[in-house]
Length: 357
Image (cartoon, rainbow, N blue to C red):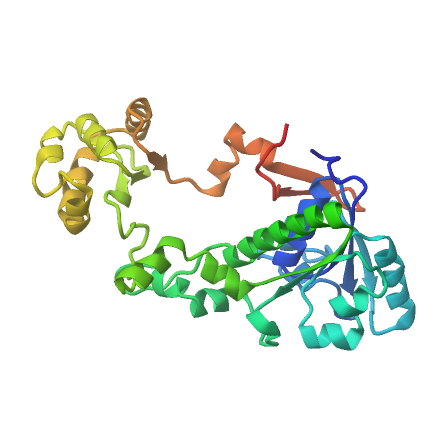
């Protein structure tokens, strides 16, 4: 798939995570992606987002590397005509522009869609905003998680708030923008015309509320913090400890799976117990059910329990840290490696998990 977009030129006028993730998607598929970074501020702000263990002498962070693979980077000051003309020369050859300027800034710089299409009439211009209708309010992922309901739902039942450990709304917004671009590319192939594609972090967050939104819209049910638990299914998300002190999580989605789990745990009577013989009853009585399951699971080693559940098609997972995740050979084909100008190895995971044959 690395050559699918080998003749495509993408100009990236975006920083942080969502916009650069769009650019990296096309770079992974063989496109020439030219990323313009603001040299007056030291480039993309995420270059400086370094963790405690990172080498401070390097001009980039691991965070920056995560979405800036295989791009041609040009440091420029787009308020200077000579630098802007370099950008315009690239745009004349380009197929797609990805931007996350505030709209007021884009217009001031002459880099909004209406200005760019005078340079390249059939350009596909993809704009990522924080909020709909071009609001100039600054948007970062945790703020979005707060304003669109996620923080109200994430965390423990005792009220301790937790955020998602990656900027998931940015990642989802990148997917929304990519989908819009691909539709625009199909339209261009048919009509020869360019398009203006746009989304916002806010609208993406709302679109991703899925069943939690429907629980409110249909039943006026406001989700409460439940840790890893599922509001509509039990046992689903409960965490248990095995005999060898490993943590596992269950995701029982059908009655057949519950009956099978009870057989594995030698608790067959539970599957016919009037408190637990239907999912809706298990949701209401999940605390009592958890006690029975905890005691039974403690009698099994993790390997034994995982093996039996796999045999009976019962959804179960071992809770693993990232060291353990990347020991699994199934994760290895998702790792992308390159080298910086000093020969230092840089690694990140692919933004692509599909295949086309």
